[in-house]
Amino acid sequence: MSDRTDRVRGPLAPSTGVQRPLGIDDVEIEGGPFGRWQRINREAGIPLGLEQMEKSGAVPNLRLAAGEGAGSFQGFRFQDSDLYKQLEAVAWEHGRLPDDGYRAFVSETAALLARAQRPDGYLNSHYQMVKPDKIWTELEYSHEMYCAGHLIQAAVAAARAGLGDELPAVARRFADLLVQRFLVDGDDAIDGHAEVETALVELYRLTGEGSYLELARKLIDNRGRGLIAETGLGPLYAQDHLPVREADTAVGHAVRQLYLEAGVVDVAVETGDETLLACSVRRWEDLVATKTAITGGHGSRHDGEAFGERYELPPDRAYNESCAAIASIHWNWRLLLATGHGRYADLIERTLYNAFAASTSADGVRFFYVNPLQRRADLFEDAYLGRRREWFACACCPPNIMRLVASLGHYVATTGDDGVSVHQYVPGTIRAGGITLAVETDYPWDGRVRFTVRDTPGGEWTLKLRVPAWSAPGELTPNADGYAEIRRDWRAGDTFTLDLDMTPRLVLPHRRIDALRGCAAIERGPLVYCFEQIDQDGDLEDLALTPDSRLRAVERDLPGVGRTVLIEADAVRLPPSPPDGLPYGGPPTSLPARTPATAVAVPYYQWDNRDGGVMRVWTPLA
Image (cartoon, rainbow, N blue to C red; front, top):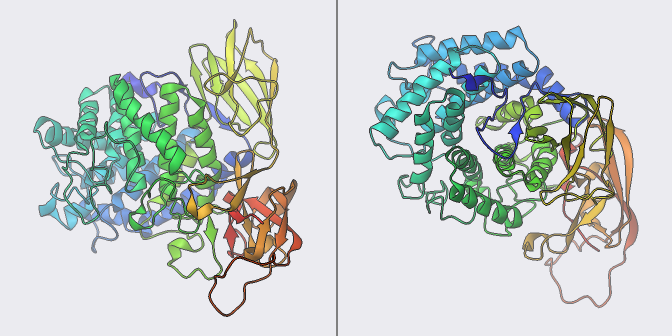
């Protein structure tokens, strides 16, 4: 192993960039929603995941591949990846708060993987047990490289969390096989599901082995050249319609596109390829402007779990897969480190507090695969679209959620040549380059964030604080990247307070979003709000907000939800439609009678923890 192993104890350790990330042990989150998520993840989520690794077949499948146990293969062809994401979650949680049980799980699983791995380094329980004659021949849908990518990321996490060399050794044998076949021997095939690219770059950063970076670059350059065999879903589905450098907009399967973008930025940063970085930024700008839900979610079509056309953002049919929210955070974090622009931290915040946070129940043991922005009373589709579930047959999301929650501290702050930049506001402690900051805040319920310098190396340095785009700057003028800069000869005990504007606001959609025309949503701070039936006096579907609605914040503690801030909004109640005849008519001769009402909104991430009834983010304007 290279000495790069010790550079950053976190998911990402680029060798260059405007900002340098901190390790998960450099940031202690001591409260707020982030702290609560980490506590529940440790107490409930990860134990559930470890239990499901046996029940789902993920671990038994690998025992079969190792010639141990009895039975037949269970689950999908990519079942191994669930285990790898679970391993990564455990590794980061161990790095955050060491635990002998976590160490034992990683060690025992690494030993099993080593026994299951073929002598040439190949490791995939489905193809070893079910289709040994089809290895590498069905890459358009086999997920073989995808699974390898998650194995590599788990191994990087194990190495950086101090969990030994066993898992990294397994991953390197597989990575070396990939290099031999797809780089040295010249096989130009690529996996239909991007993911291995970003993993290979991180393995390069960990080990210093340049062939991993070269293979990642080749895989990216090969995409869009028609090298993925037809699956019936078309070339856009797997981003094989255009070379990466030529594509202007995100298309196809949302998670695949977003994982690909993370790899594109990684390769661009490590090779100094500015044109490659620029093409990813170009797609980001288009994606944010035309294909992003108000919650930060991505993927407007259930068909293909895919992006739709520009401004195709239906609330009720929104897919917004939980894995897409995670992949979006990965991509935005890489762009933030590469460029220093606060707009990427803004989108991370929007996604974390809304699309991502909504994926998990308040008790931490039920999950959404799909995150719509509206639920009607007569929802009748499958359980993936109903209430949160404990697990899924295709369980890509739950362990993915767990690995991000365990590593949340990595995304809070960075260090640069002249000080510390804080991107996300959480109570706790930040340690960076000899600087220690104590952070006191009740964010996101309150906009005041107080920083106290505990330790400093002496001399002048700059504290950069992100001023979110939703907040009025107040007395601070942010720079071009969206950060307020406070440069001083800081001394231990010095304090600084940031006050962000938490006034609730009514938000209107772009005029081209047909599905949302005539509607409005409510935001407060970083939180998007929704209306649930349980909080309304009368049928939610008959409520309409007034254009000049007064919005009032009310702090509450709700059963099944916990602490929250509700928004009371001026509204009117419309008379129900006639029960017979078509739901259409001519121009009204007079407005229907309207009854004044108060609509009550709850943060979107806290929905579906009570009655599981009707929900709306976007509500008609009266």
